[in-house]
Image (cartoon, rainbow over all chains, first blue to last red; front, side, top):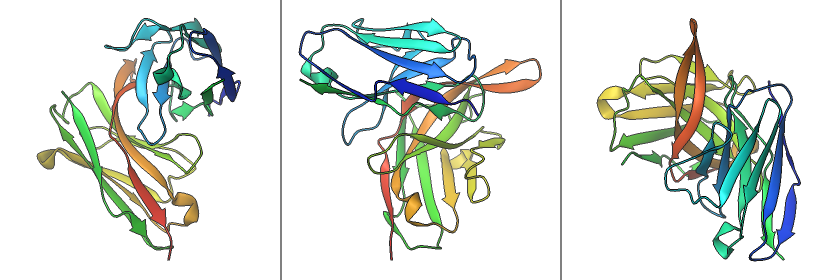
Length: 107
Length: 127
C-alpha cells in the first residue's frame, strides 16, 4: 500500500497569513493526488485534484503543486473560514489512501 | 447537481452486522466514468477508505477490512450499500459515501479523484 505522510500534523497561523502544507507519498504517484478540506462535524470537501487543478468553485487562494512523491498545498491570505483540517489522498492505485491530516488553527 | 445521502442504524451491537445505504440523486449511478465508495472516520481520527463498487458490480476493497466487508449496488434504486459483519467498538465511526472517477491503463481499471461526498452518518457499536 502507498503510505501518505502529512506535515506538520498541526499549525497555528493568523488571519491574513499564507501557509504551506506538505504531503509525501511512500512511492511515486505521478500527479494522482487530491486535497480535501474538512471542518468539524462536516464531510470532507474536494479542493484540488491532479495535484494542482482546482475543483469547480474553489477559490484561487488555494494552490497545489508537486509530482512523484512530494506535494504541497498553499493557502494564501488565511480567513476564518479556512481554519480546518486538510487531508491529502493518493488515487494512483488501489487501495486509496489518505494522509493523517494537517489541522490549521487560529493563532 | 449530484447528491449522496447515507442512511442506516446509528447503533449496532458488538458481533452484529452494520448495514448502510447510500442513495444517489441528481445524476446516474450507472455512469461508466465513476465508482462509488465508502470511507469512514473514527472519532478524532483520520479518513479510511473501505472500498468501491462499479455500477456493474465489480469491487475493490481495503485488505484490512475485506474479510468482513461487502459492498453491493442496486441500480434500479440508485443505491449502493455497505455491510460490515462481526463489528466491534473499533468500527465506531462516521461513515461517508462518495463518488470517484475511474481511468483505464491498458486492461487495468485504475481509480481517479473523489469529487462528491455524502454528509456522513454516525455509527456507534455498543451493547
